[in-house]
Image 1: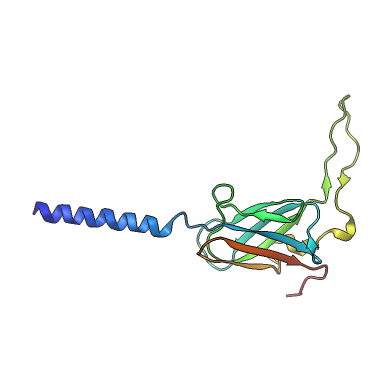
Image 2 (image 1 turned 90 degrees about the horizontal axis):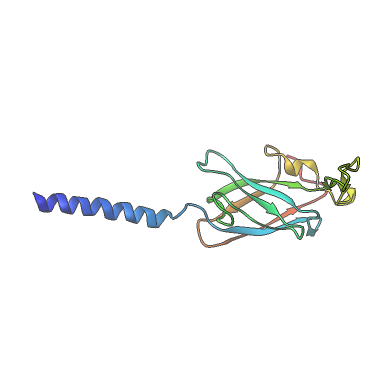
Length: 155
């Protein structure tokens, strides 16, 4: 009887370890670049991957650098995203808040960092209406380039 219990325990432990090795963290590295009208998006901003359908898990997001590059995170910086199909939501930094002067006063208005001609349409920042899509594969690193146009496709 003792051998059966020990064998059963070993089988349970091995199955649990195999499950952990197979699943890993459940997220896969994702990086890429955001383009607007064929050029890297000006000003930087934020990007998020919102799961389509009934996908379980957390949405991934990241910061878009001024050169348009990004790297997604779900639980810790750079870990990536869970696999699946996503709606991509992009917001752009177009102004910066003014800094206080030495005497404690502050200029009256924010400073524009992106000219109006280089600002992305608001639909790309809408989590329900953004026409952007991406697929994250459950394999090695994923390269995802996000391409936006001045005239986004209509639904």
